[in-house]
Figure 1 (cartoon, one colour):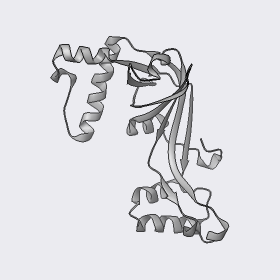
Figure 2 (cartoon, helix red, strand yellow; figure 1 turned 90 degrees about the horizontal axis):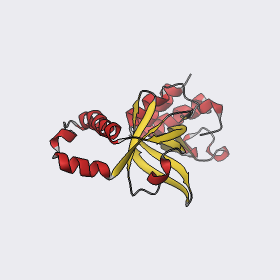
Figure 3 (cartoon, helix red, strand yellow; figure 1 turned 90 degrees about the vertical axis):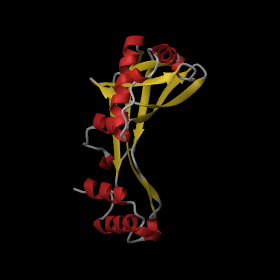
Figure 4 (cartoon, helix red, strand yellow; figure 1 turned 180 degrees about the horizontal axis):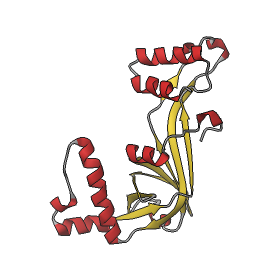
Length: 196
């Protein structure tokens, strides 16, 4: 997380995680640090996800304290967009949530519930209606045996919403104008939203 307190976010971090739905999951293993990339769901204060059993992190997660990082859209900021470009350096505006906590593996019943929740959550986002019920049961069971479901219980949540909050009104106006010219309307909106 960014050390500048000006970039802390008051937004609902679990809501942010649920809206984005994809995370980097970090953990220490005997072979060194590893990261997995997986869709995540938020339910009952738990971050749910699944990994292929062959994933380098999967065999170590049960009982491990892990770190999940979910990043949102971001954009590069050129010093040329500021009032005094020669006195500044490039930077990057971004939003991210880090969640730390112990992980436990799910049994097969909970894994199937997770997979059903996953399709119920993500299928409507793309206008589709696929469910596991559309699979032949032996095939579904074979595929479930190839993955493991997990629940991370958050013990620490850290947020960053870096959106030029530390810049003057004139510098912010320059950044917003430049982003709008580039068609980065979402980045410009994020800056406007972050201004007091």
